Length: 340
Image (cartoon, rainbow, N blue to C red; front, side):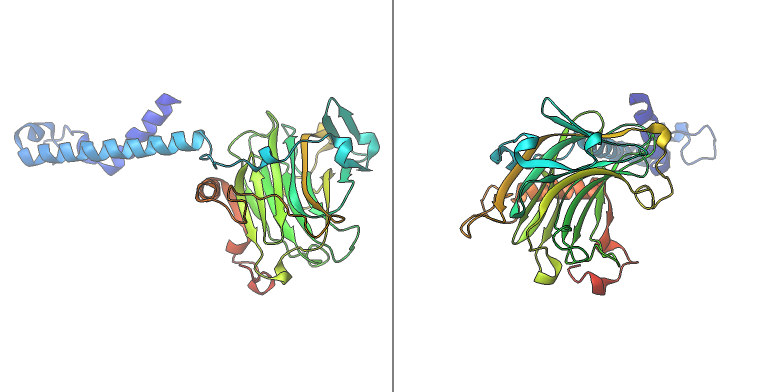
């Protein structure tokens, strides 16, 4: 790795500063004899060495910064919400034969016969909803492992939804984490999604990582290991989900679009496809709570929004790992997404 970095820096500095490397051509302005006797060339060498040193320092800082992950957000909302067991807050919704709970870990899987899903016992009108997930390595194209809020069963054809979806991939390529928001049927029929997609700064197949949605009357914030990656503010009632929703998780086949717009499909030679969940968190106001109930805050101030340190962490993630933003897609009809 060190030799590769050094080689890359050498070739790049050669392109930027050719006079650093003397030529044996007597007619070349960079001939090594001239270097010794010409003070102006010597000064150029010194200045160039300073520039190259600064260039190398900046490159190394960039490499090591990305390798270390995002800066600390300074506040950890998951620490304010206690973990619960699966049965305390959820139940199986479908595919019970493809769901197993053992020592606090829920395993759901998809094969050629069925997938599986689960659902919270109660609907919520706001709150913090989280879980730790470990994804399957290898070929998972076409497969979606998800954790999301929805009221599709209460409002079929006119529902709201807030999604965290892991889009399966092919070996050697990273998973895509897709966040999405649907409002009053924009996920039904003529779909109007509000997708923002990310790669992750770690391998989500090697260990469990925490993913969460904070939803209150003024904003939606998506978190990965307590780092905010996206904030979706309420700009109008028409572009924000306000009706109670349940919390869901599932694994299913979305071969028509999930991996590189459907280029790669689910291949059941690699079945079963497994999603693992633990560390469930449900904190907030259920649909049956009193009007005095207040949802948890995503920021240290206890109010809405994020702290400057949280914004800095989010901007780092979006600068380095965001791969799609519906508001920046010139193919999208802005009339349908006025919040952009």
